[in-house]
Length: 403
Image (cartoon, rainbow, N blue to C red; front, side):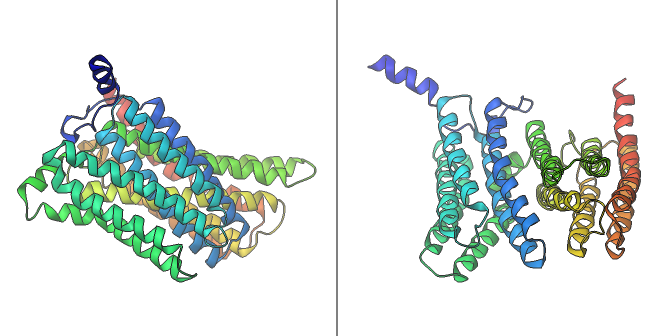
């Protein structure tokens, strides 16, 4: 019996201490599997937006996307700070994945008839994270100064989502919004603890020290979201009964938009750590939210654009497309100010950031012009060439340094 207990403890370890996490490690297959589950729920949100393009549809999409992104962000951060290569980590990761799958089932009409199911699914996810964050303080007394308020906040927001199922619409969604606001402000509150408590400040510096694995996870999540643009192209083509060269050219141009966004982000931002202070780390985290939201919205817009091949795009579709691309480029430009760079790279990306902002402005102006599909996409791709060249210049500079 004693041998069994010892063996069990070998495979069911306590949460890892943030102060002891491996600085340079490979992202595990478990983490990749976890990220892939979010493909389904992001696809549901993107498809719902494409079916209801307008101010109301966009507001619903943004609201639900923030909820989903917050779930992913916290699951990812917990694993990076406290995860182990053991059975316990796998079990609780799989439990999170099951709750995300449940969220995906109800996501398409989460602000309608499926709202109760979505609320209970999200509450289950939050409850799992509440327990996990609380246990970090149980096993690491130094970390308790952060884990206690964090887990208390998570428990409160869990109760808000669960309790919302007992009230009528729209009050249900007001409770969701309150829970979401508390969640988004939570990191800022915990950072403020450091101003009054040296022990808290020491833990804050540990948990906000960006790791290469966390940077990689954010990059992988962006790849998942970029995949939705390609899915949008394929879904748009499938709406046509006959494939023509015009549809093929439109699909190719839509795919080039996804390629351009990949090129700009991964040459300019990816594989670079955020600046080592809580404010810049927070900015780096939160700027990824509108970036990924914008990219997924591009996928919804591209689906409708391909559907309307050869036609003048409806104003709401045109504005969604150019607006989502512009938002993505603006946030990439802002992210260039939050990452660690040597003096030469800093100067290169400072100029590159302005290029991205100017290109985003010209792209947004296309919303005022009633262009047909192919001219609109051709101009978009041409306008994205300058941000690509700016990002490419930064990437080539890194290669020259490595050589």
